[in-house]
Image (cartoon, rainbow, N blue to C red; front, side):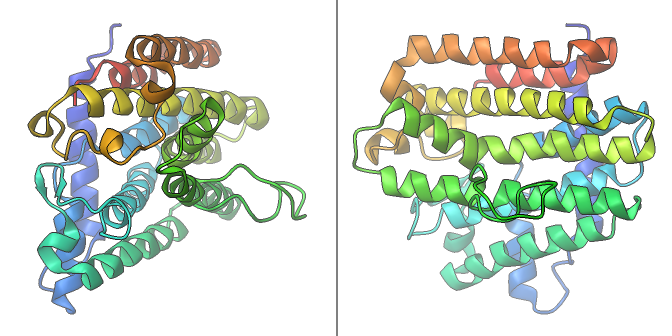
Length: 316
């Protein structure tokens, strides 16, 4: 693949971190404790994969980086960081290491960690509401973003009527918690992975595409978004399968978080159902399917494809 993924990641991290520095309250802004906690977890050395996927999807659709794409990526990173803060709490995974540093509740106490997660999620929606995009685009972004975070309830998109929706990140977390201690089934593992991890990765790509379409409205919106969603769903599931494999095969030092937690807590993981060899095969096939969804975009899809390949080739 011709795209230099390391350069892509480096430039994406630089763009995202500069914007996060601007968007997050400083450590000297009162109340100091929560702002320090928010910054502790946000600037703990994350890969910024979700913002970078968002940025590159927006760039691919618009033909150039549209205004607001980096801020939208930051909103996604805020929600991702909030989910990690809460996931590490004693009531959930009870972990004391994240990205090689003490988790938020270890460093600042449980109460401040809970509120820091709440504040990051709130700031994410505030950031999206302020995007320099047409109002209809902002609403579409907010809608997809909120569905990806939630539990699978609300009006069916386009109808305004209540109905059954796929669960988002929080719904996946609930299924993950309730599945502990039970023999995992293939159906349960896939539902958890598509919701807990895949939904936020998918909306990173879809909302980036929506922002790009707002800057270039001549596109066939329905086909473009459907292809981006397929790409995101396939790549997101592959990402979590690889995460499951790494948890079983890498050390805590290599991962930057406590290794072996999934096995120790009887988590529903892909290798627990299929084994490591089949899990690796499944991740590769998912990435191939993700690539196929982007075929009509030609060479402009190379950055997104490079990122998807990186998701499955990574070792930490």
